[in-house]
Amino acid sequence: MSQLDRYYNYIDGTWKGADNWLMVADPATDEPYAEIAEAGIEDADAAMAAARRCVASGELTSVRPAQRVTWLLAIAEEIRALTEDAARVLCHENGKSLDVARGEFEEAARYFEYYAGMADKIEGTSIPLGDDYIDFTSYEPLGVSVQIVPWNFPPSICARSLAPALAAGNAVVIKSPEISPLAMTFLMTACERAGLPQGAVNLLCGKGSVIGAHLVKHRDANQIVFTGSVPTGQRILRDAAERATPSVMELGGKSAAIVHADADIEQVIDSVKTGIFFNAGQVCSAMSRLLVHRSRLDEVVERVRELAEGLSIGPGIDNPELTPLVSRDQLEQVEAMCRRAIEAGATCLTGGERVAGVKGYFMQPTLFTDVAVDSEIFQEEVFGPVQVIHPFDSEDEAVELANGTAFGLVAGVFDGQLDRALRTARRLRGGQVFINEWFAGGVETPFGGVGLSGFGREKGQEALYSYVQTRNIAVRLKGA
Ligand code: NAD
Picture 1 (spheres, rainbow, N blue to C red):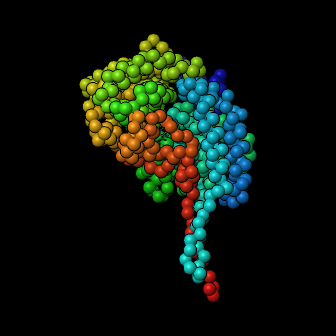
Picture 2 (picture 1 turned 90 degrees about the horizontal axis):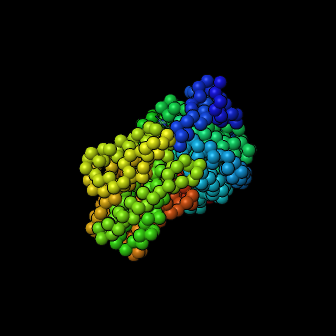
Picture 3 (picture 1 turned 90 degrees about the vertical axis):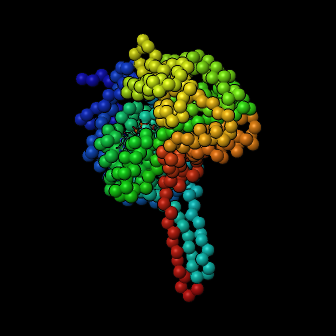
């Protein structure tokens, strides 16, 4: 008999176990931490049917929008009440620091508050066609939104899509990641306590290639919101094409910060610390490339090396500056990519391998210079605490280097000259550009990619319109 805590799927307002249970390890110790019911195809079908019934009942969709405001605000309050317990679970299952885990639930609560503020303001327009007609548009919910979540920020990414979907009146079926699925269940508890209609929200944990693929191809799926890697996103797009299901794709990145000659180096260093070492670099919008004007290169390299070598490393529960990677697989992939970079001729200034002599999945903070711009380490996402530092001589060259990958998620500019910073920012490829602070912005600011980083926008007012479809009604007036 297993002694581990057990977590359940949430289907049609009920917590459900399974024949198979997936073990979740603690990345800080490599020990089993808990287990979660592995959903099967019949669970996925039950969740989709429940969501469809909820849509058909009109309980979520046809109510006065003020009711949805009330539900969303109640969910935010319940999330806050659950945060301390939920953050500890997230910290143990994911490796991230306790403070980051707490922040993630605070952000999740903010998404519900933010979209609560919009739920009763989804207003259409009236279109003048002369006295013989009345014409108006309305924004209608899509129906059932299938949302597939990655492991790096499960509760906050889940809330990022769930809150606007509910605000717009959609029922939702969520697929949690196989790695780090536990803390997301607390969001379901919050929804349950807030009194959402039965079937409005469903959560399944299961294999992506089985449950995820089944949901994507399901005839009742009216939308797919995917956050994850490029290959999975491409696969999902091919599957979604079968039914022409509308999709939002939030994929990976290889984002660059440009440090101009007049940059404030303290601002740069503060931003590097969060930009590449926050959540152990397992961030889609990580600052994985630092492009530095040649006149400041030596100084920046020295300061970043000092920063990397001085970071405290340890289990997330102790709130260190650098936490373990999420899994052994992830650690092996990051280490292998560093090895290939060295074989390809890059100079490894510091790090480059796992932390020796510990049981958890700890990767050393790693910096590369002398990197060829067409090499893997310059072009591809690492998803770990690994940064490339590269010089440039002119603004044009910096822009070309920053834009010179297949991705386009975010970018950054550091400069004391605001006019040059803005000019550079306008030329950068990506959905969001930060000036003088990496990760500036919040739940209020639209976020999303171009190129291989995906399409569609999450966060901000704009994201709400990813969860509705426009209907136009044109009326010919009799005897006008
Ligand atoms: P992943 O693509 O391996 O998995 C993401 C999710 O997709 C998981 O829930 C997985 O089970 C599911 N999945 C796998 N195969 C599937 C299939 N055939 N059909 C349907 N679902 C399937 O990604 P990951 O390793 O969990 O996450 C890391 C990646 O996510 C990185 O590339 C990162 O950049 C990206 N990411 C992007 C954003 C963003 O907002 N742009 C945010 C976080 C992470």
